[in-house]
Image (cartoon, rainbow, N blue to C red; front, side, top):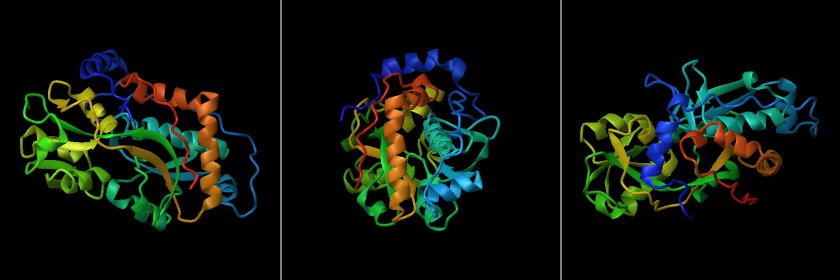
Length: 294
């Protein structure tokens, strides 16, 4: 699938144009997002997850706090980004206002456990759907498709494709799909981190030669520090379908979320959510991927 990023030059031009929307270096993502109106008195089958959440009047959603454009803690302490917007839209369909959402920071290594332990009701956190994870949790979606890429220091001219990292130190997050791919398929030496932001200083100090994760996540870091970092290439080398994680075998809830996602694609709220967040930097608006109703 063609990557959603534009040419590097266009990306940085867009980043400059979006400067007024970006938060300062001390924190925050891009923009402030939207406030979707909650549905009044939605009705669900007794005993369903939807009915329980609606009756409680609140929902706990896991997301990332360090991913520019998708999920990053803002200056007010609340996360902002495209993933956050998707979470708010789902909550609204449950009749729950955005200020009744409890946001829980989830990193790649703890997402399955947080769902299993009931620490969250659902997770929207650049969460790639794959067969291994499906054995532990269920997924609604996908609601977005990214692709793996590499970020290097601005002065790096030796890494332009994934084959160039063979035998080199590359930073990625423990338990992530990109970490496995870069080692198993391309022979890199993994330098693990708990979050992608924790990879920035090792790259800056040349303790590692690249960071790898999804292109849209790296685009956010490049947007914040275009004089320090760049994408090694505009091309991606995997497909990363982002899904919404929830408890295993909660088929009714999964089907309901899938219905809502399809509705967001039709009523314009999906596009609005993108434009209010990641679209400030990545101008090529995505189409909602086909829902995988497995």
